[in-house]
Image 1 (cartoon, rainbow, N blue to C red):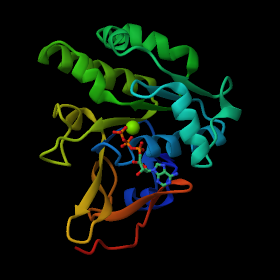
Image 2: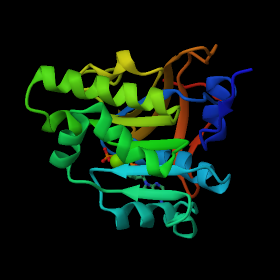
Image 3: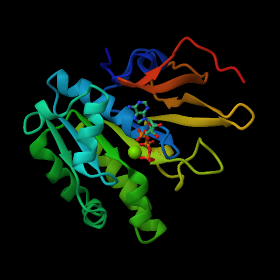
Length: 231
Ligand SMILES: Nc1ncnc2c1ncn2[C@@H]1O[C@H](COP(=O)(O)OP(=O)(O)OP(=O)(O)O)[C@@H](O)[C@H]1O
Ligand SMILES: [Mg+2]
């Protein structure tokens, strides 16, 4: 029986069909402010609470900013730091160099023996890579190491302006086991925003194919798995 991993967001678990299949890498696509980091915090926190080894690798924000966001959402990382939750904040160029070799990346993860990892974000890594072949190589190395390690991962990525369903580089969709899209839809007339989540792909799961509303609230991300989107 396949083990399903709690995403840290109850409504998202329902949409997926119970949880994320253990060992999957899931791409989370969204534009700025859509809630990618917040989902990463929910996912990391629930793992930490359950005693799993968790890595939050942040390339965009500083460690302190992730910690204060975790506190804001009542998902305080502090009690787990130095224990089973590690926040890594490598330089982007340094991390790109490391990803050019599967061995280097694998060896750097090994001592932490992670069961969950969040990479926030892969867009910055891919932007920093010099050429398309390097980008492809990096994404394949990343995916191979995550598979070999058996870790369940969230890869956060900036969506393109033209489509909320593709990453800017259009690469990671194909190597990921799952793809989740987060979208802020603005209504100019009403001046309101609707947040929409879709599970575009989740290998091995008969997932919900509909768009559902979500919000960023006092406890982080909250998905209304039974609600319809009204246009
Ligand atoms: N305490 C809070 N209560 C409600 N909403 C909040 C709270 N804190 C942040 N938000 C909302 O969450 C958004 C930020 O979400 P988050 O940082 O997870 O997005 P992101 O997709 O990671 O963005 P980026 O691409 O800029 O990293 C803010 O723009 C704000 O709308
Ligand atoms: Mg973010």
